[in-house]
Length: 162
Image 1: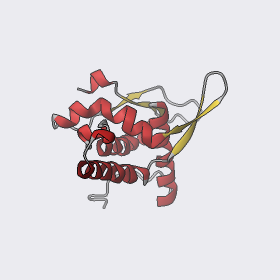
Image 2: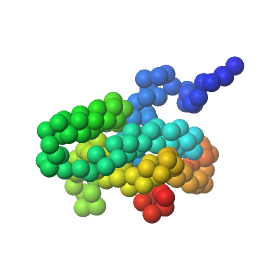
Image 3: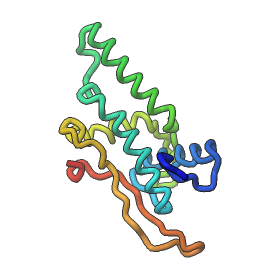
Image 4: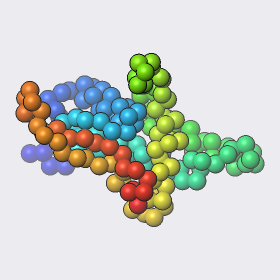
């Protein structure tokens, strides 16, 4: 019996499953919207929401200008920021390459994007105690080759997150 054994295995061993979800989470942060199978999207939602929550729990410290703080306050704030970034970096790849519309490539720091662009959108949600609900899964038609149910997983815009 699988009592209290959450999560799907996807017919992969632990390291392959972890690598697959690291890549999916990195692409979700990079593009903010990806298409994958329905089962992978449902499992990825758990991971992505934890990453955003970890970043957004910093609260006002996410956007504070550390140069204006006193030394003791700066040490505390920077220490919490570094700790949160390291915890997220254990799972999320550090950088990823995005292909632009003109065919050139751009390297994007995924940790910075998560902490600077994505997490601040959901600050009100964290402060109000609602927590979670940063992603949306939309079902699509089945894949033509193997008839797998497909879905789009995306981060909600800031206005919808409340």
